[in-house]
Amino acid sequence: MKGSPTELRNPRAVGIDEKSTEEVLRIISSEDRLVPIAVAAEIPRIAEAAEAVAAVLRGGGRVFFAGAGTSGRLGVMEAAEMAPTFGVPPDTFQAVIAGGPEAVFRSVEEAEDDEAAGGRALDQRGLGRGDILVALSASGRTPFVIGALRRARERGARTVAVTCNPGSPAAELADISIAPEVGAEVVAGSTRMKAGTAQKLVLNMLTTAAMIRLGKVHDGYMVGVQPSNRKLRERARRIVEALAGVGPEEAAEALEHAGGDVRVAVLLAETGAAPAEARRALDRAGGSLRRALEALR
Image 1: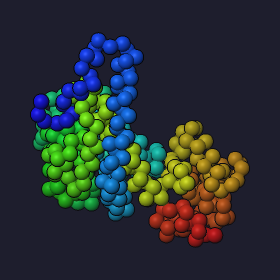
Image 2 (image 1 turned 90 degrees about the horizontal axis):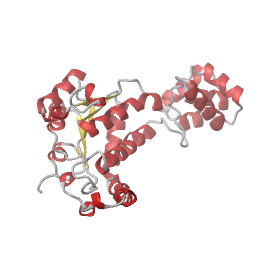
Image 3 (image 1 turned 90 degrees about the vertical axis):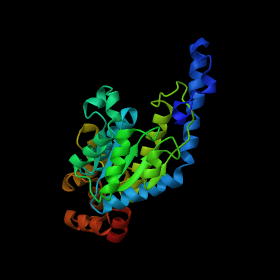
Image 4 (image 1 turned 135 degrees about the vertical axis):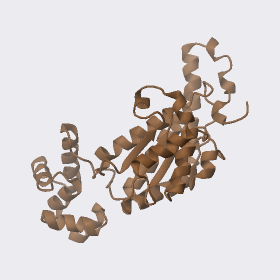
């Protein structure tokens, strides 16, 4: 069969329906172990994309994910996680999925064939020159995604394609192409499997690296976390305790004076600075807690 590698039959799956459940699972597990290796081979491209995302965000731009089916849902999930994890405004990361919000919960398969809809979805969000589009498509051929890429290029936005098909139309359209070669799926064409796992790993790396560059992570802690519920408030307190070397009560008090901003709270607890002084130091440090601490010390 010609076309995307994601549509090919996996030789290891021949006769799989005659095997025991444990044998089936061992085949799936063996194939899954290939995914991190394929993703690791793309680290130079992922790094380039992460730097591009960080640069866009430093300039006040936004990050858009566009996809259909599994790829689209991965984009929705990634966008939704950014604000609570890293404390960015909710509209900084946005996702468009073929078929609209309904497609997040229920398959709307025919929607991915509408190329013009990809462009319209970005028009509705006002994507512009200062933004960046991360296009997600296992095959790299999905019309909705191609339409989104074309419109992003027309509007002067940066573009990244995350596919599992090097040399695909999406890869050729994008400024940066990330294409881990995971091979054929155990169930031919079921890209919710290895291809979906690969795309999720790429997104984890891309966004996390960008947030680290922007000072949202310090010594492995999510210092940009928004303490919006009990679990996150406790996490924020523990982070302040660990980084400032103070007890629970002092950490909680620092967080209160900092308005819930973990980085400001650490500066207050460790250096004794006033809240306004700590915020100015953080701003001058470009959001980097490490540089702000060095300045206040």
